[in-house]
Length: 246
Ligand SMILES: [Zn+2]
Image (cartoon, rainbow, N blue to C red; front, top):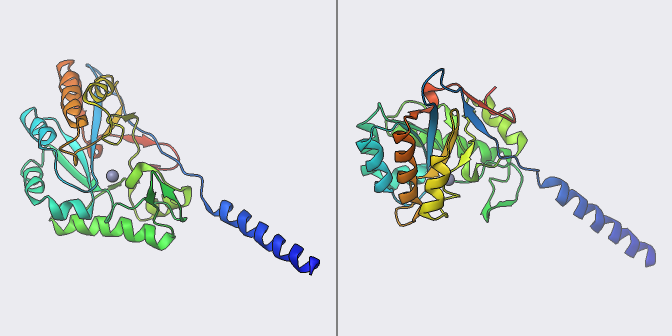
């Protein structure tokens, strides 16, 4: 009996070891663009449209001030925001639409939670998330996406390798502008206005009721006033770490 107990205990302990070994160590890749050769510098503005609505404060400010941006859209958001998609399509000189996944599921191929969101959990589920995001964009008549950014912007290294094999570059960032749209307007504006030549800013365009959106607009206008220029990821030479762009 004691032998059996010890045996069961050994099995239990090895199961624990297997479970913890399965939770991948995640990475949050950075991305920079090539600095400007001259002038006040240039930055790339990237805005995530995860789910929910459209922050028209930001969308209108981008159109009015002719600020180009790369918008990472999910299949869910595309379905619910046809009017905003029309505005973006009407300004192809300003907006580049890229792949934020079909259902806003983190591109992590082991089962775990990231900021409370369940990961894809398997290689097949990561592929489905990436491919369904690209398919949703194709249905809107957009050019095929070249960049992917997963929900939460965290990845398992093996998922990064899979996504690269599909032909997508992975969009990290160097400035977290709005802290997942949870920061106040003042702090968001301060972070964005502090962007330097070559930075890639991430913020959100899907939370019209959050104070952060007001800060995004203020920060961008401050950069513009300093003479900073804005480029989209397709127009810049982006370099990321963790094998995300090479
Ligand atoms: Zn997102």
